[in-house]
Length: 182
Ligand code: IMP
Ligand code: MG
Image (cartoon, rainbow, N blue to C red):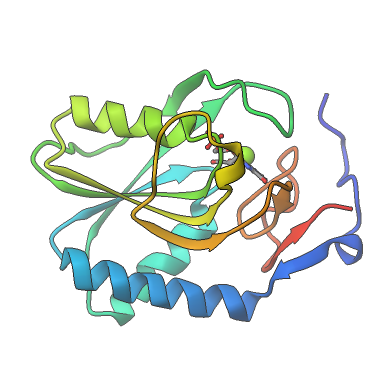
């Protein structure tokens, strides 16, 4: 069962990346994405985890003079709180078509790779013209399927992180930094 209040106070969370460090990294990523992809693409943000990253990345793209279309898809992988089962389902689908479009697929974190792999296969089946993957965090130590992101913000060790959209039992998504639960 999910707890009815956050299991640990915000003050006990050890900061891994501050809001300032994250903002600088996201602008760097947006500049690199624009340099490689131009402006003719659609951003697909995987919910819920990537909503904060997506909001900041698209504004950083604007700053880089890049003006993509944007759509969202909610995927969930059932499982225990800190470990995903690997069985991914679409909870809410895109509203737009991806056929013949260049897609920038974004997520908060790449861990086992199962979520992004599922999304990638689905969008390929639907006829996307190309697929580029950007994640804010990469935890390569936990990979279960072969998947490499084209753009990575920070590569992190094998520890559970929260904040900046990332949750534990749907808590901590609002934190402006990324940190370790105690
Ligand atoms: P994957 O399918 O194992 O690559 O996991 C991707 C999803 O698991 C992400 O979209 C996150 O929602 C979640 N996730 C993986 N690692 C963490 C973490 O350290 N903290 C919070 N959520 C995580
Ligand atoms: Mg999650």
